[in-house]
Figure 1 (cartoon, rainbow, N blue to C red):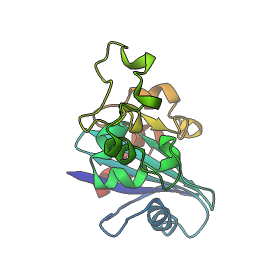
Figure 2 (cartoon, helix red, strand yellow):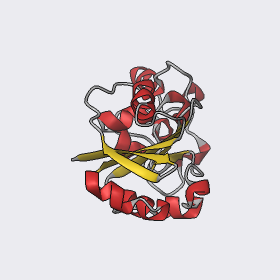
Figure 3 (spheres, one colour):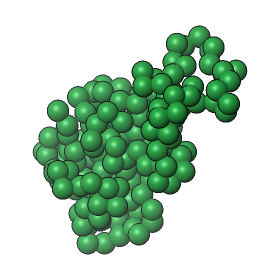
Figure 4 (cartoon, rainbow, N blue to C red):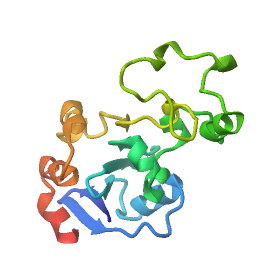
Length: 184
């Protein structure tokens, strides 16, 4: 189960609107949808959550490029909505490249010449994914701009510590919990 909402900061405070992501296929589509939420070039936050598995925040300030934070990239990668947020740039891949598919088709362990990576034995048991690709192609844990909400009252430390009810806690910190609950 997904929940997605837009929070637009206006001179009167935050305004929330429920949003449907069925027609959104790319980050550009999502940015266009968010920009339509406010006639001015105010800050707009897109909040997306999947049943406490992961959450994402996309921030748009006017015509600037979207800033993105995803709480768990590996969990989000298994979601059609999460895939929208996990751009090549966010994951540190070459644009248009599919590192995992290339590695899977070559059946390599993700290192040059097939040699084992010195970091493979780090004790966490995450040396490779089930498909034979590199575990680094989509990392477990947070990715993106951890300071995305810092100037709005949610510090990097607070953002990284959020788990269950993350969107509610973010909204409380922003002073927007009541408006978010109206669209939940």
